Image (cartoon, rainbow, N blue to C red; front, top):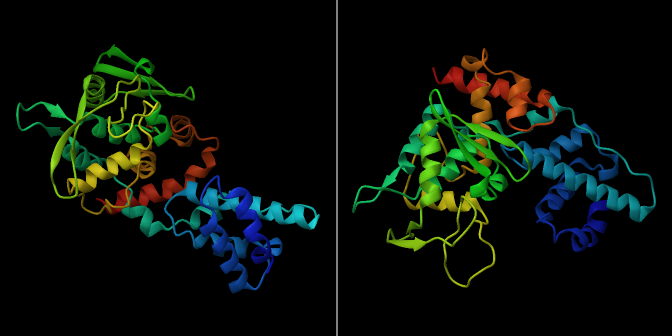
Length: 314
């Protein structure tokens, strides 16, 4: 099979970018099972390959397709033959997502509030709010920011504007996207987060200690620990939040908290906006605009998920 012959050389050249070994392994397995070489694959073989990802995330499927195309291009170049295209229609592509897994990490508004209320932690000493950083990470994902956008929000990127309902928060992301937050609780949490100087960390033995944040221009600040680094933003907001959820034993009925990621939380808000109860307020075009999506057509499948999620919740 072609992939076995070229996989080692391909990984030597490209695997420094990301861990592609598992994806290449899935390509090899699909070739062996179908007895069809990669360059002869049709939609059926591509679908078999993508199912092996067993993921609730369209982004993960896209990553697998990118590696598939890059690997095929690599082989074509080595064999000095014309490149070939691998195209999957949106409807077929989205059907390859693991729906059961997707539902287990898709929170509705009530579940969002259940988790958020557990993140609303107060100090036992003086009753003040603590660890606002972690709560704000969760809230910003629900408001539609990606993990990369969350970690790069600077204090100067945030503006608080008076409104009829209290106050609106405007955030301009590093990529120039404007996010408007109208929930007054989230606005207040961001204000408190801007003033927060330390974080109370709980380890696996349930022992807590207070850790000071680095001096930073960013909203989401890293903890000052170990050897100093020139970075003043938090490398991975998802891992920080995941540690808090796990260390404190937070739970939410119907949700797999061990698997829940910032991408899941962000996608959950998208699905919530497409729920039947919100149809008079949000359509494909304005949801696509809110989430900075290039093609609104890809939302049709998520609207089906929204109908299933919110009809079953009644």
